Image (tube, rainbow, N blue to C red; front, side):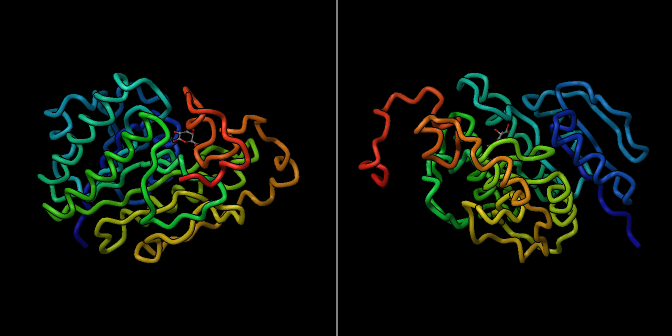
Length: 274
Ligand code: 15L
């Protein structure tokens, strides 16, 4: 059996990076971990860690040498001003894709629901819906998804673009009854992303099997993945846990669309305005 090619994981020291490291350790893969922050856990036997900035393209190329998959979870992961997002999420992403092109590696990109966050909660979206970012952070995820598209169309670099909902140990408010993505479902998805024969450029809704979901069709069959957990069991305790802010409650992205919002607060009569 040929040795599987190593996996490069960016953002390894972040919450999801740590979960993925733990989930993929001990399964026969060599893990190359990187982050701008130190790795806070004990390093698994089959992993190495390099502290690096995504802005450093030379180091990213070196880290990706020989890798078959790059799980790209690095960069700014919350709503921040444009200047803070620019380096890690745009230039850094370019470095990741250039490395993938050179190594003929597949990229799994941690996109976000904030790439479509200005869709109304009453809408049910498929993977090919219009992108409607709700923040500069969300806009950087749109950029990332389009980067994946460009590198597939132009260079045949495969991407799995995972629009992550809310990946936390458990849902904590009513919106997450729709958006929650359990850690176990996330890890199982990563395993399929690494193992799948062919993915092309695929969009996946990164959410558990929540019956209140905002999201419909995607490319999961291609990966052989289906979520097994659900936020439904939390409905009784979280159903009433809403914000009271009409902008937050109107849009799928929750607090992000409302942050810095300067349009008139919507009245019910305007709820379905395009
Ligand atoms: C995200 O993209 C963020 O990384 C995370 O902190 C949450 O805000 C999540 O989206 C969400 O929408 O719940």
